[in-house]
Image 1 (cartoon, helix red, strand yellow):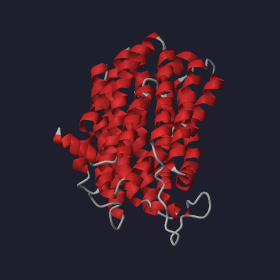
Image 2 (cartoon, helix red, strand yellow):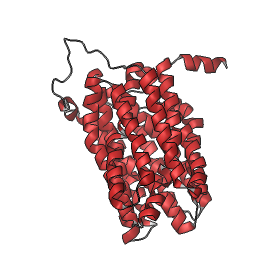
Image 3 (cartoon, one colour):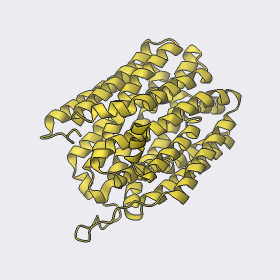
Amino acid sequence: MNRLRQAIAAYPRQFWLLFGGMLISASGSSMVWPFLTIYMRQQLDISLTAVGLLLGLNSGARLVTTFLAGPVADRFGRKGVMLVSLLASSATYAGMALADSLVPWVLLMIANGALAPLFRVGGDAMVADLLPPARRPGAYALIRMANNVGVAIGPAVGGFIAAVSYDWTFLAATVSSLAFALLILFFVAETLPRVDAQHPGPSHFGGYGPLVRDRPFLAFCTVSTLAVIPASLLMVLLPVYAKEQYGVPESQYGFIMATNAAMVVLFQYPVTQITKRYLHLPVMATGAFFYALGVGSVALGQGFSAFLMSMVILTVGEMILVPTGTTVTANMAPIDMRGRYMGIYGLTWSIGIGIGPVIGGYLSDQIAPVAIWYGGLAVGLAAVAGFLLLNQRLRKPLHEPS
């Protein structure tokens, strides 16, 4: 208990408000997203490629608006960006419960992609504002733990609820996003740093010039995008693959997602305490290797137990790679451009999640369903090579170990 009190005291009260809000929001939204591909395929009677294209529209909208989110968060503050994002999430989840044809789903996926993920830009920048560099790896690990506690609860419960009625899962997601928005509105203070008048930030709204010239960071983002693609294949397409090829129902698949979340909750913080001691690019390469191995192993699986093991392998890579990448971004960003750097790094997820399911759906429809996983393995190994090449080519690592 003494250690627990010390750990809580090490971070400010506002950080723990974000932690609690993330837990609430993730619990609701994760009742929807693991099963959304199954729902769209059944509701709309469309091909897996078409499902991938709908998800691609979602990610494409993220890509466009993320360019605006960074400057807005740096100019006007983190809180407003987070509020708009959460309110938009609540509205789109409510709309999904009512949509019954392709056109409304296209509009909802674009709207959700454009506004819902912007919370991450403001939230990650707010954590960087609240804490010094040495404490950020642990903070980002704890935020991921909160998210994954929710993801452990959501799919395990949502799988059973979805088997009865998907409408209730959409309602849970709507209410949880709205609850987090109210928490931020009334209890979270703005953290936008005051920039020294002698060193003002970019005078124009975009202000991406210094970032565009930051070649090491852009190279890092490019390779990170490759690493995201295999993970997106497993997270997005495995529910459909497991159900249609091997008869794994939503109620069982919910436990696969819950295992991913439970591992992060139990092991993310100690894993981060180990990985932060090492140079970040080799650590990222190691995480990408586990991504590739986890996705490739799905090709050999034939049921619930095998797919569960694939998720375990991938989750090891997730715990290694994700907090490290966010920490690198926070530490590389100038104080007046944290929102923009977080926004551009967030594009690695938007692009990866947008490209991955489309490629996977095409491989499944044109070659064979199992081709999804061989393609993911190849891209994952390319990401491993990319991180190792960056480690050799750069004169110094992107960031020294903590």
